[in-house]
Structure formats: C-alpha cells, structure tokens
Length: 341
Image 1 (cartoon, helix red, strand yellow):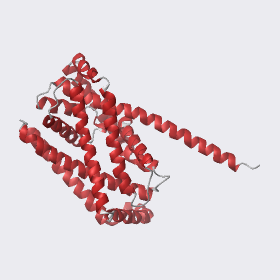
Image 2 (tube, helix red, strand yellow; image 1 turned 90 degrees about the vertical axis):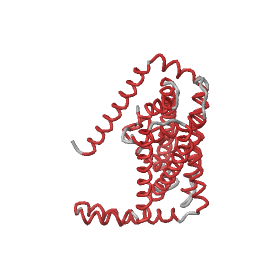
Image 3 (cartoon, one colour; image 1 turned 90 degrees about the horizontal axis):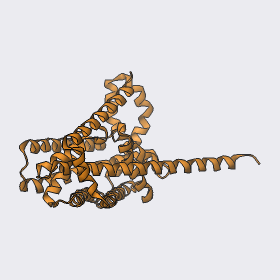
Image 4 (cartoon, one colour; image 1 turned 30 degrees about the vertical axis):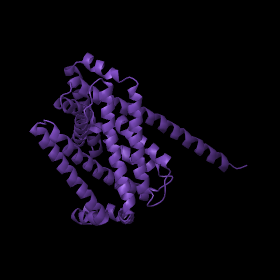
C-alpha cells in the first residue's frame, strides 16, 4: 500500500470513528430527548442558514480584498467558491479541509491563474487564522471570569491557543522568508528531491514573489480583511444564540460566547478528524453542560449546526452540477465552431 492509499485509509478510519462517537453520544443522551430538542428549531433553521451565508459572504469579501492585489475577481465567483469549499469539506470529509481550499483555486482560475490564486488563498487563510486567534483570546477573556470553568478545560484551551499562535507564526515566517529558499535547503539534505526542486524552481520563485507582493499590500485593506474575518466569527456566536433561544432556553450572552469559542477550540484540536464529525457535536455538548445547559440541548445545538452544513453540502452538489453542465455547453459550442463548413 502506497503512502497516498495509507492517507486515504487513515482519513476513512478517523471519519468512521467520529461518526461512531457521534452515534454513541446520541444513544447516551437519549435519541428521543435529542430529537425533541432538535425539532424545536422549526423555521429558525432558515434564519441560521442565512446567518451562515452572511459570514461566508464576509469571508468572500475579505478574500476579494486580498485577491485584488493581483487582479479583481468577481465577488459572486468568490462567494460561490467559498460556499462550494465549505460544502466539499462536509460532503467529502476524507479531504480533511484541503479539498475545499484546492477547489477555491480551481473555481477562480478563469479569473485568476493558479500562480496568483494559490498565494491569495494562502494569504487569506493566514489572515483568517489570525482573526480566529483574536476571536478565541477575546472570547475567553470575556467569558471565563464570569463562569465556573474546570481547570482542565482552561488548560486545554490555553494549550490549543499556544499551538495556534505557533502555527500562525510559522506560516508568516515561511511566507516572508520564501518557500524557494526553504525547499532549496531541504533538497540539499535530501538529494532524491533535488530533481523535483529543479523542475519546480521557477514556479516556486514566482510563488515567493507573489507572496511578497501580498505582504506589501495596502495596510488599510489588510486591516479591513482582518475585520471582516473577525466579524464572521462573531456571526457564529449569533448563530449559537439564535439556536439556544429557538430551543426554548434563555441565551445568556457570556455562556453563548464560551460555547462558541470552545467549539472552535475543539475543532482546531481535533483537526485530524475530517470534518470534525463527532468532535464538534461532542464539544457542543461538553461546553453547554459546563455552563449549566442540559446535555440534550448541547448535543441538539451541535446536530442543528451539522444539519446546516449538510444542507450547504447539498447546495454544493447543485452548484457543481450546474458548473459541469455549463462547461459541457461551452465545449460543445467550441467544437461546433471548429468544424469545417
């Protein structure tokens, strides 16, 4: 079995384990009790879908600001790419989030070549990660002093925050120093990779030039992109608030903020589980019960948010089908024009 098949098998196993864990949570809490809580969402489900579309739009707007460094890409295209990327992560959990980011680059390719699209996505992801870090730190600083949180959870949160900080720092350092120089040193240490490096050397140099261009981008625009990503995170808090209210419970803002932050921390900690199946729902249950809500409500919260993701995944299937059909029409029209008269 080659490395590629091993990775696929590992992702499948992790996905199955996540689904088994989710099933175990439902059985432990009680399927009937979970269903009674979840079904109360009613027409509020459409509202939380709109909220989710809102933060995807803000993320698309931030991406548009970054991508405009090279050449403008229609906001509609970026928004569709964002929606499809989010759906792919849910629809194909074995992609482990990477498939969604790759889809973004491919979708905008007609407007922005890969040599510009990939650096733009990577830089946008860096800004998004930094915004998430700011959200997590501020959320914990606001909520923890007002809640009785076990020391174990505080320690876990601190470890994850430190890990995120280190990863972001490494990402920024690598982008500033340049991938070409780093891979050049590695190619000297591992001679077998030298040939590949020489073949891709010009592409890597172009990538580094584009990354430096992005770092020299207008500071005001970069701040605007950061604020948009940060605002999208707070819309996630609003989603949790709406769900808890719809389920018939008093949505204390401090508790809602802690639940939102803790779920993001858990998703980050369990990033190896594709799509965070089971981990995200378990985090919702644990966070909700920690601040005094019933376990059924916590699990219901996680399941409702998962259902919203599945709905978006179905929309992704429709969008991909439409795009495929359009490509077929274009190919057919081009073939007809080339036929001799």
